[in-house]
Amino acid sequence: MLAALLEGIKAHKHNSEKFLVFAMVILQKQKHVRGSKAICSLLTQRLNNWDNGNFQMLVDSTEAAMKAMLSFKWGNATAADRLDTFQHLMQQGEIRKAVTFLSEREETSGILDPQHTDDCSGLTTMEILETKHPKPNNTLSPANLPSDDKVPSCPPVAVSPEIVADVAQKLRGAVGLGGTDGPTPKGWLLRYKTVSKFLRASVASFTEWLSTGNGPWVAIRALMSDRLIALDNDPGVRPIGIGQIWRRLLAKTVVAMTGHLATTACGADQLCCGLKAGIEGGIHAMAQLWKHMADEPDFGILMLDAKNAFNEA
Image (cartoon, rainbow, N blue to C red):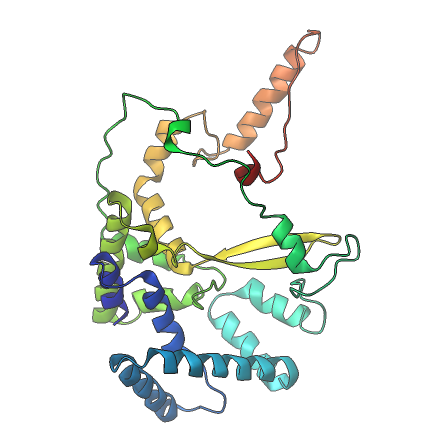
């Protein structure tokens, strides 16, 4: 069903919101539902409701289950519950996250509440985040962009299910708005034989469609969205965007196919484009230049730090 929803985005039957919501409403844990028989019955019931088009009811029940689970975790989690969480993270290979869970459980986690008041500025976390995302000062149009008569042809990217499997082996990351973390799609793509093979084929086909086509933005808007959180920078607020794990999978798949070509094309002009030790080489080159030009009175370097460059350029 997940693979079919992915294919449906390509066919313009629905947008990516439906693909992301499906996993959330079907797999949301429910308090006091334990044991394989009870879990299987609950999943079957939810899948039947999905087939019958009862989407709003599924969303409402998912939100209620989320609130109940959060309330339980924040207020009533026992030592045994914390041990289960730690073991689960370790089994998934999330060693750093598991250690952080234990060490920061009783302390501040570093993630600020939206209504938290910053001692330095007197503003709430939400107000500080809004100041970091101002509205653009200018309205750009295609006329503002440079034109070039010699635009190179772009060869199509041929993505195979085998490449998707290789990328999925190393997939990890935190949960975005879609509610799916790194190890979960890794298991879906690798552990279930025929159905995993079918899902890998759909992911490969969807990656090709994104790489070589020009689909409507509304179709992939949800896949491109981030979950914004605010970390305590002590002092200050540091905004962090957590992207969808599916977007990470698609991007890493494209990089696996084309990264070496980008490295060759960029060469020394873009030192971050996969060039090994490129940044270190750039630092050494600038140090040598600075030493060579030390006695020149008209030599210097202008360093600019553009505040929120994308919005205020």
